[in-house]
Image 1 (tube, rainbow, N blue to C red):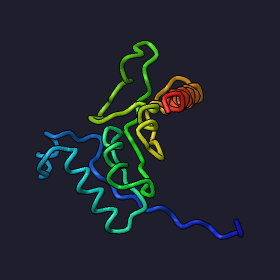
Image 2: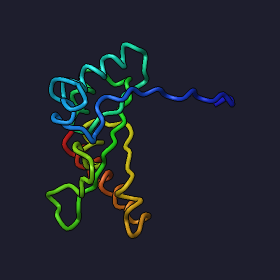
Image 3: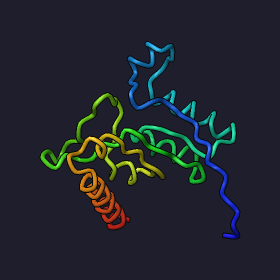
Amino acid sequence: MDGAKRPPMLLGVTVLTSLDDTELVRVGLTGPVSARVAALAAMAQTAGMHGVVSAGEHVQALRKALGSEMKILVPGIRPVDPNKPKKRGRQDDQMQVATPSNATRWGADYLVVGRPITAAPDPVEAMDAIVREIALGERYRTAQA
């Protein structure tokens, strides 16, 4: 790079991960979450945004609809609970959560991981476990390809 700085990316927020269909109605939005996410993401792309913020469960549909140029940031990341390998970790106030490995496998470009690290007894180990989980998911995806 010749010293030039990259401008910041502009991301449009679709539906907050703390909302579900019931909460959408309460705040005055109609239709299922998936329909609102799709409509808001399309608006963000039309407006020239660089990407969107969306729950993990919508990433595959968004990637198909928006293409590979649009970035997708996924909040509400909850790692697999090692004591319950078939279940996600605590949801807290999040209605729409995804594991790190699923979000990246589905096509997320960026993950937001807050409480699973900040509330952990050993935040460094919590982050290391998330990195290991993503790496295992990547190895699985590569093996499936």
